[in-house]
Image 1 (cartoon, rainbow, N blue to C red):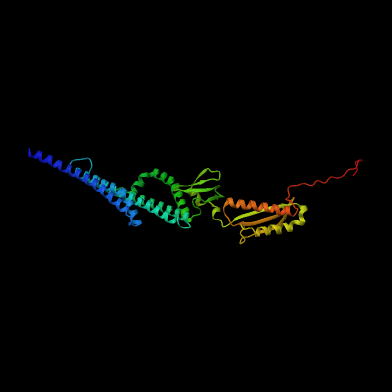
Image 2: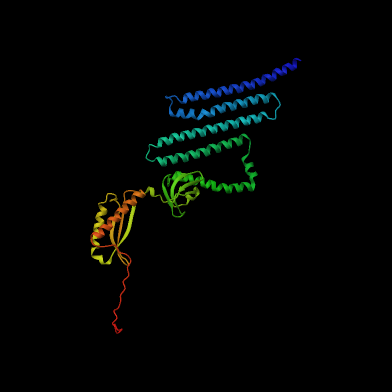
Length: 360
């Protein structure tokens, strides 16, 4: 009778221990969250401390609760026969710790990335700096996840060589499939390192036949909005051997055209050329430090050709077109002011006069 009573008390004892651990874990998790919340909202707290508190704010609660649940389960397994071994619980506890460490590191990285982006908004190279921060952040994410996965495999006592050997032909197929993924990832990484373009810039590739405004540089591909406003998704590996033109990084935009004057206005060519040259040299939107040509260039099939060649100060496409239009209209005014005109294709037909008798 006494033995039965002792067994019952013993059973109640370890169940009570498990319940006590769970309640204590719940309370500690709640207290930890409240403390971190108070510390994070302190005005005297430096930014680095606030980032750290915010990083641990949610994971700390789940970490304490999870460890409490595992500890309670370990107490129960140690006292009664269950299908779960103590080694399995120990492995689960280690994996749990790795998982939460990974979660905390990723949260810290994300929050610190936001802080850095806020700081670079005040710098002249804001767009480029933001992309560099994004690239480093992505690399860190990959490193953290890969290291965590390797540690978990080690905890589970999985041999990587054996795992690869088991893959066989399937592993080779996966390797070929992963080749493109790796190529695209490193293509994106090279974009961030070399910076041939950044988000918001208009680019073109003569050898890959695409043109548009860069909207996003992703892990696997880059999204470009074409001039027809269609989204184009370009795998990052394409950029490894693509020739990229980036008009947004020009110092100037070029104006180059040929104007044809009628042959009958040949005596006015020199004065027209001089006036066009003077107009360009006095134009406030033309860069006088760059090449500026205005010359009678060639005898065309039906016109005397004058070439105009100069550079605008602006690189903005719309403003450049407005300036070019203004210059073209002024050239027309100069030509007309000299009593000349622009030539157009003409043909001269020589007719032989024939007498009434039919003889010339």
